[in-house]
Image 1 (spheres, rainbow, N blue to C red):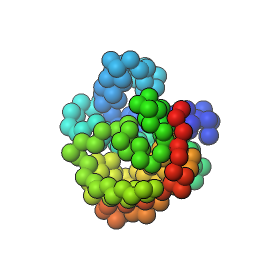
Image 2 (cartoon, rainbow, N blue to C red):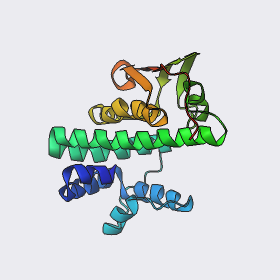
Image 3 (cartoon, rainbow, N blue to C red):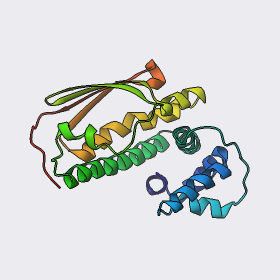
Image 4 (cartoon, rainbow, N blue to C red):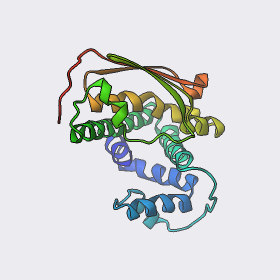
Length: 214
């Protein structure tokens, strides 16, 4: 997200990203960064933590889903409040790229198991586990998936924090982008949102029955 915002807006956006992380809390950001390091990944948060090593927020409450929702919203708020529509476009593009990368990873996971990137192998190879904090129903037919979420910790956190106008930029982009990354023939209609209607409703469709193994 950070690299896309800076690419789209310029280096002048960096102080606003820093401010968003500060609002989220240095201590929580450090915990996320440290966990990524333990898992073998150098998190981009490291650069910001080095620039301001203070630990101002020691609140341990909340799940990782809540934390990631809040981090996204705080950074997005600073960028959007400063840059308006161009800030929104930069955030949307960041989410789109992130989603497509995830979708490509799902396709590669399916291929590793010997499956093509067809609709039948999308959910079974999905990259994010669904904890009890998600409640959803899937209805699968030959080339369609109808999916309804009645609980989503991301959307619920944004509503609780009054950050829906920023969180919706993630919701609008992420699932269509993940699906497109998995297979460019995927079409996704997202016509209801937890943030607005209290539920998320999706319709996934794919006209082509045959995918490809990567």
